[in-house]
Length: 169
Image (cartoon, rainbow, N blue to C red; front, side, top):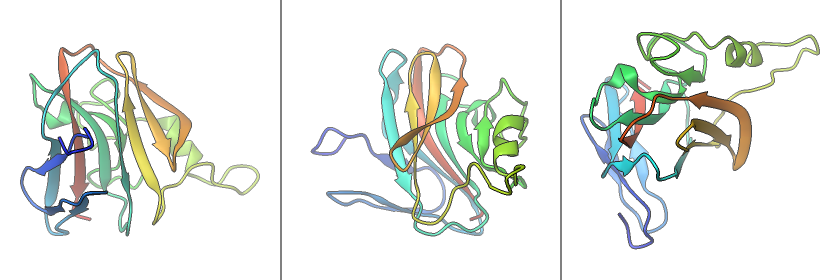
């Protein structure tokens, strides 16, 4: 936890974190699956929020969310993003598919395609800030400081750990 009472992330395998007084900078290694976790777990009754600003996005292979601190299984993480071969930024959880790499979120997928008005309802771009807000019932996606319509229910956990995954991007 930093001097402002905010939690921080730590590198679990590849990549780098540059700690600053204002905002920490996470740099990924494009040739690896990069995992970053909060430095401590949180009790399930605590609501938490974290966000990251995307300086440069390549293949959009980023996931932000939470993991049960007792199970610690990546494929059971819940949150939002893209991993694996998917190009669709969407809700991901063990409730939706067996693997975090599989996307079964038809609503967010549809919102990233051209609609009848030839518009894309949802996209993540360079410079965007994406955030994840945890409550006991749901995880919410926040983009550029605005609560989106996207939320995800999750299983009941005793405690959880915020995570960031950057997969070969």
